[in-house]
Structure formats: C-alpha cells, structure tokens
Image 1 (tube, rainbow, N blue to C red):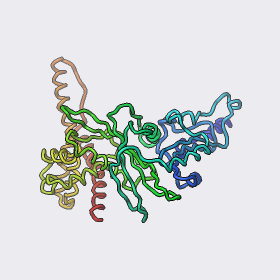
Image 2 (tube, rainbow, N blue to C red):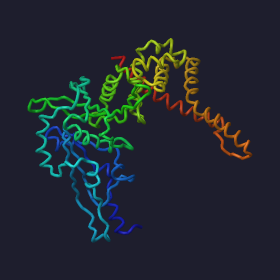
Image 3 (tube, rainbow, N blue to C red):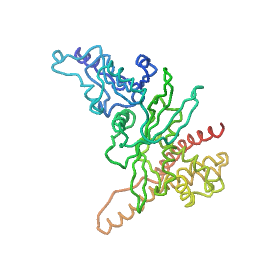
Image 4 (cartoon, rainbow, N blue to C red):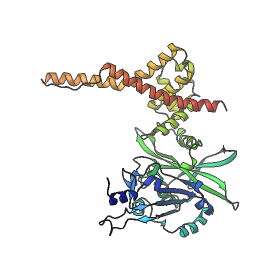
Length: 409
C-alpha cells in the first residue's frame, strides 16, 4: 500500500497536454470563450517523453496568440504548488521557463499587456506577395482566405515567422526550427480575411508551409516541401488542399524547377498530396483509363513531371490510385491484375535484398567464412506483402472517395 507522501506526489503530477490551453484571439471576448480554446496533439518536445508536469494541482498553462500578428501571452494558474520544505527539497517543474526557451523574447507575461496589444490587429497585414485567394462555404457562412509568399526581407516577417513556427512543437513530431538566415527557404502563409466587429478588414493566421530550394544538376532546382501545418481551429475545411495548390502554382510554371519533393511526409499530408496529384494527373492523356490498364510507363512519368513537376516515385503512386479507381473490383481478373501489378512494385526492395544476400554469401564462401544471415521465408514474405498491399489499398480508397465526392458536386 502506497504511503501518504507517494499518494500526495501523484496528485501533483498532471498531463502536460491536458494542462495546456491555446487560443488565437481576434477580440477580447475570445479570452472568456471556451469555444476558441484548443489543445496540443503532443508536448513531449517540451516536457519530455512522459508528457507530464510535476508539482502542481489543477494546473492551467495559457499560451495565447493574437490572431493575425501572433503577439504572444504566456501565463499559468494552479490551486497548489509543491512546497520543497515539506517534501524533502523536491521542487516543482519550471513550466513557463521550459516553454519560454522556444518563444521569441517579446512575450507578454501580463494578460492586461496582451489585451492592450490587440489594437495592433487593426493594422496588421500579411507579409509578401499574394499568390492565391479563394472562398469556402462553411455552415452557410462564406469565408475568404488568401495565401502569401513571404521572405525575410519583409520588415517584421522574421519575428512573425519565429512566433508562428512555435506551433510545430505541439503538432509535428520531431519538428525542428529552420535556419531563417538561409535564403534558400521559401515561406507560404495562409490567412483568413474577415470583417471585425467595428467593420474594419482584418487578417487571421490560418497555417503555413516552408519549402527548401535544393540544387539539381546542371542548372535546375528541386523544391522540397519541409513543413506544412493548418492550425487546429481551421482543420477539416479543405484548406490544406488550397495551400498545397498555391505552392504548386508557384513552381509548376518555372523551367528551372525539375520536380517537387516532400521531406518525410506524415500519413495525413501524403494523403493530401495524393489527392491533389491524382486530380491533376487525371486530366492528362497518359493517365486515361485505356493507358492505365496497360501499366505504368515512361510517358506517364514524363508527362506528370512536365505538366505538374511530380517526381517519378510519386507519379507511380498516383498511377496506382487512378488505376484502382478505374478498376472494376467485381471483375476478379481485372482486380487480380491490379493487385499483382502493385505487389510487384512493393516487392522490388525484397528482390534487391535477395540479390545482395546471394552476393554476400558467395563472397563469404570464397573467404571460407560462415554466415547465418537470411531473409524471411517465402511464406512469411507473402504474408507481409499482402499486409503491405492491404494497408496501401485502404489509403488509396480514402483518396478515391474524396475525388468521387468532388466529382459529384
């Protein structure tokens, strides 16, 4: 049975995800409106793998941003804090200090000071060049959005981006802040354009993306999308699609751009990328149904790269999505041919491993050495391959479902 002190300690341990509260504040009323609050998806990049905070009871950590310029307030409240004189010198975690390490120095520690800064929202305007504007109908409410391409030469943009990138800590695993002094970075920012209670036009930050310009021989570039984030209050509205299309539009028409790549995409972003690329390639002659059933070919890869800067690996993936969409799943022969085509591609790494292992075994025999290195048995490999295929098909079907929903509108 645990002693009283141990039990007391447990009460003073809180989950950091539960303790944190975020807001994007458009007006003073938002501060008291629970509907404007949202939570992090993770906090281990600040508070460690346990995602816990020690030393407080009923802890609330408030990290508020003004909606446009992202003026920042950081504060906390609690019902009780551990007393080190009672608990053998044990001290509470320095919560605000841990978070502050990732924030720019100009952070409000007073809520009154933060409220006073909200007047800046009246004059805040997006940085850089307007690339794309669009509207959506959300719950019978027409909302206006714009995408801008900013750069560090814009006055105030450096500080703005440093505030914006802090959201990566809470929503993208293994996130790193980029080197903003490297001029090969391109910045894409999305805003909602809205009318305030006073009738003035204002802009609220919605999300952002960063793209790095890699060199490609001999005189080309290969833009790599590194970070993409739509902030939680604005997710599931289709805004990520518009942001990605704005990025594509910036590079597709440039002759020096070889193709567009993505750095370690999450499952969610890969699905978004598949959707946009599949819609684009569905308009190309080489991706017609008549061509799809004949298998992936060089013409598909070349046309996808030429028209939409899609690299060969992604073009093959898009081909598989569109061919599945064109396949009559009730036709066993047609469906079987599709499955075999995809599995053959999935099995290429295994075949290479087999070849490498045989070469290694030959060398070891020549050296009169024994090796117990072995690949999985054929039956085991078939099971693994089937599982890989089924997982992939389910992902493809999600993309196809979204494509079909759009075509029905």
